[in-house]
Image 1 (cartoon, rainbow, N blue to C red):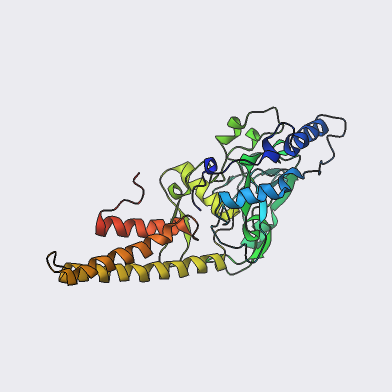
Image 2 (tube, rainbow, N blue to C red; image 1 turned 180 degrees about the vertical axis):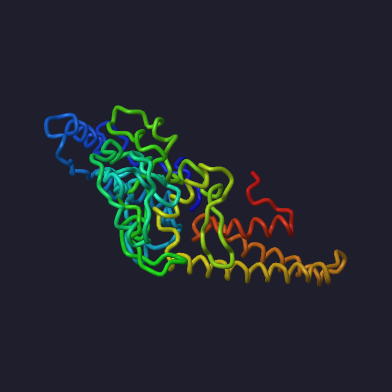
Length: 339
């Protein structure tokens, strides 16, 4: 995952124009959820499906999934993903073994209550028994007022956005993963319920990384032996956000890890070519001998090939920048993050 600068792409008029489909749809959704039928679900969201919206999202993320950085449009048309779910939010909780009350429980750093928030007792038993205590339900409505909000939309691959059974790295059993309607918070009581509340209130406790607001490179690092993504342990909130995002976006699924591992091999091979070219320059280059100037040109060429891995339209740029940034700084005193 890398930073996605929304300033580089104009928001589609269908969503921003005061007389456009997005604004009209917003008015209808608000009228529904403030009217007599507000307990019923509103499901007439169509403005975000406009072709111009998807085209703009493709341009925004360089035809890649905004979350996993995979290039996938040759195999699937892609999903328009709502960062904050429009229809409802999946809520995970436990049933206490001791008092039969339910209490919030998001694992893997999302929200974790190790004891019941009612009676104070801790759950116990085998992994299978504890799994049965976990329940899920939908909180409705979702963020209906953001259904056609440009800042709430991303292009996503199916594996990041939709629920499916997948094998994760270091796991032995398939798990149901994918973002879908998940949007975990540090404090559930601060979740927004209506369009009249300020987004700023919830942003302080948001756990999923928004690649258009945060720079994901500050949250993630990669194991260059395996392709596994992991959280940077710089501070508590950074770590929790990274762990939550890895889980919810399914960034540890095995096929994805294998693709990152292959990218590591490709980058490592090119680094070796650069090192060889650099040795030739150090050994043979003579400023006064034009026949040796080709060694410098060879080095420039190999460096250019290496830097192509960090072009924004390439896959797994976050991983590539970690590897190549360190390599260039150590060998050439080049800082790829310098302005």
